[in-house]
Length: 414
Image (cartoon, rainbow, N blue to C red; front, top):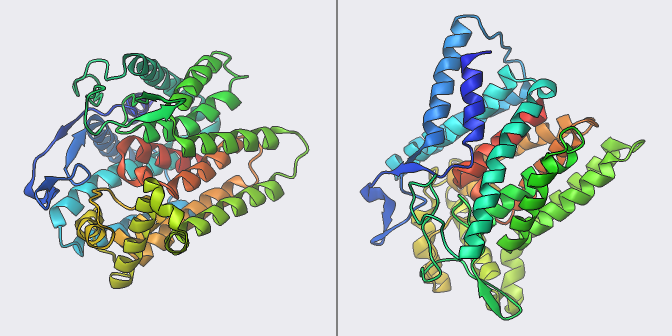
């Protein structure tokens, strides 16, 4: 087995880790406040994927790997990464943009590596077994956190577990039947991210459980964690994906026709969400729903920034520098997060060309899966990423879910 492939499997095993070295730079401060999305972090996964990249190049030179770059996916991917680089060069906050781009490029290399080295019929089973172990750990940790109502070790050194207690000021709280509780974070920065991750990978374990019956244990344990996250969008993502998977699993189905219907539905969701600033401006009830109000406000500000920086954007990972003062001036509150939509976020930070190329890459992946009746769950996963990406930004900003997105897209091309 190739050495790079062994390390790649280690990389997949350690995918859930949040362990990294945070670097302090003055550019990560906005109006005197440290914004964690702007702070450079070197994660364990960064080191591993860099090592895989170096070994991959060496193995090509040593003719241990024979590759062809004729794939449309690789061509569009290359153009996409180049367009992101242009946005970095155009950024007024070069160091923040450059560091974020390097890490995003390394994670996106998963796409190239999978397409050039792995075979879905042979390697998907191994990837699922490795993910099984990592997901079981996430779920056990999540259950203990929920029981304790706080972090287990309350120390970043424990696999990057985010420290928090029931007395933490900014900790996420939910209410159910007049009972207030803290949802599990596991190794993620927010329960919504944990829920989004579970909503995708749990379906993989469920629809491959006949091949490995022990997959059902992580599915049920993960389902408990998914419920406890109280991430409504993750519930919807899981529910729609589960029903869609059951439907497509039936024999003698016209896979292409029904997959097209599912794709049209997700496209409708995307279009609806993109118009929420207009909807929100005319429905005053949105003012009493803080989450929707914030998301609608960020979308509206992002559209303004897009008009001002249409071709190359404001700079990769730089939109927060512009949205914080604008959202405070227009809407009267402080919110140091990117716009909660990966498509709009990509457009506002990297511009028109990156936006179109990313959509094209997703389109090619979905098109590739339209006739795939064997690994149909990958098609469902693509639609889940698009759905969740309409309401949050973590598929472009959080390292675990960025890796999951590129892994899913790459497997969809095989």
